[in-house]
Image 1: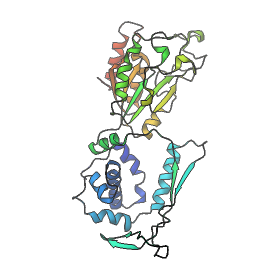
Image 2: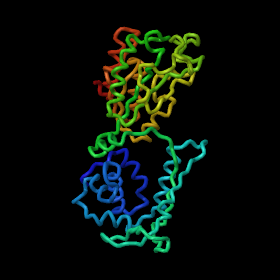
Image 3: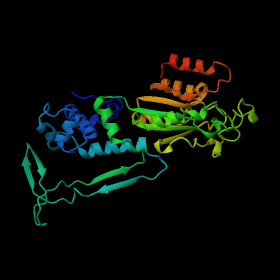
Image 4: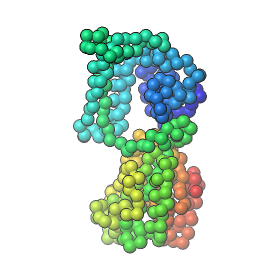
Length: 339
């Protein structure tokens, strides 16, 4: 193969392999990658160009995949539907199904060319031979963050890892004037917005402390911190200087009153979200370096993600002098890239 399939995509495609013979599956993988990465024509030629196989594979190989290869569109469609239902839908939420009968209603004469039969769709009255494709297309509608197609295309062609930006707890209560301010915590907004708008990330996530009023970390409950980021309060909201148009998903954490909730992965759906979106690497910024940033980074590493912590986009509390420096050392020792 002259193209690289990212591990996250390859893992997803492997779940569909049993729908094909091995040679047919290889063709399917190539054409799918070409479809994703192609900016122009969505034809078979375009798919081969997108997969960098134009002139390497015979054009007829792709056509035979659609007309003669031993695979069932119905079986493949059902397998994909099961994956969508299992991974992308809430079991308590009714499914929304979209039906497109365009191909079912096409009329025309079947033509022959390039070693395959195709639907000529001749312009004629309804007395013409109605070969058509006789396909009824059914889709399950799911709501996901929309990725910029050009960014996704470049990453697929180059074989780069899919990346997410995690903005940790950039909230009112953690900035000057808040209940638990991080010194100069508001000064990272420019850097965070720069990262979010850079086009380098396939997904942008913001975490929020979202504590119940009786959270165990509060001094009023015997904990060490003043009451902060109470769910629904103004202090728990994302800081106004954050360009929230760039944020795809907000993850609330710290909702269990019996846990500190420092990590964005603790008691949340963050790991599953990243895996569902095919993310391999995360960049982390936000507040505070020596608590939530550190714990989120280390948990991301434990979950198997590559981690980069952006030093310009973090600030720490430094309850004890040197806490931030030690936290950066711990993240680096655990395997994070600090830059």
